[in-house]
Length: 207
Image (cartoon, rainbow, N blue to C red; front, top):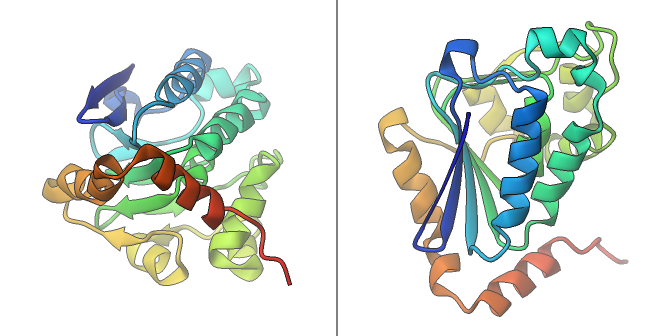
């Protein structure tokens, strides 16, 4: 249900459960964590999905059994954030619930027109994973984060781009081509230089 391929120092992880809107099971979360950590020697990492939805978040049955509050979500987003190369979420469609965590942890996010972004965690009676509001606030600000997490607003790709949640809007037929093009400089660069630049970008601003 997770396909991992490496080509030209780019590792691509694809969620492949389109009949279930790429909803994530515990096994899929564990496979993603292992695959992200296993890609540490690649220059770039692309996350995408099969079908018209990137991911609906936790699988409903698994969520009822406790997956919605599993520490695996935080472990996955932490693994992506710690990835030393360039990480890109190539969003083939809607992102819902806990799936937002892995998207927020990526360095860049590109999305197809018509995708929706929502995180109805409060409505469902759960808290988001600890890093998700922090990363979302860093990208779009506190008020817009509350708009999504507390007001339950579902935003479209255009609003996501205007907010800064998405960095580029790309036609579906060009999504993976564009994602790979964004990786080209990192693939061509000295790995130490690319990783050092990422580390500098992630430093906290000091006054």
